Length: 157
Ligand SMILES: [Zn+2]
Image (cartoon, rainbow, N blue to C red; front, side, top):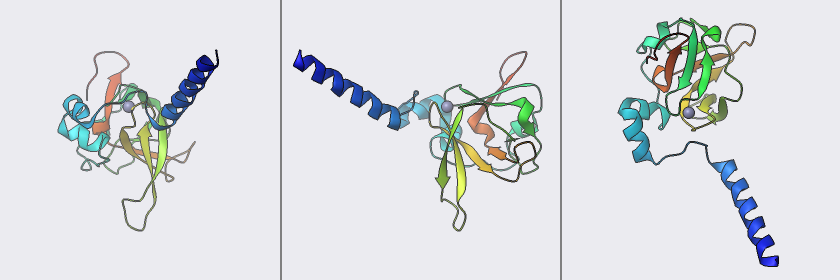
């Protein structure tokens, strides 16, 4: 009996530990690279930034949903997409619980807010405070980190 309780406590504590540190979708770097290809991998798994004006999704304004290209979790809606003119797909809001945030010190002299997928941890882009109302936020997202799913019809990148 006592042994059973101890085993149960150990299990509960290790589950809690792994939830705090891991994502629901987790793979080795090699498996991610195979799944994503090198261009998407550089963004999603290494925190890279695609060249401005390089993504066709920058000019996509059809109705639909933008998923994380790493795990397929819905992240942004076309209803919050707007033309920011910066060269990356931009949104003024994010779908509930789709992303998490972290401080990003990559640029010297500027602390940015990094946006990553809450399900796989994939790097999506950054969040700034110079967006339009009603939020005043600008989610500046790499097109390679997204997959656009039109409301009707097949998905396209
Ligand atoms: Zn994801």
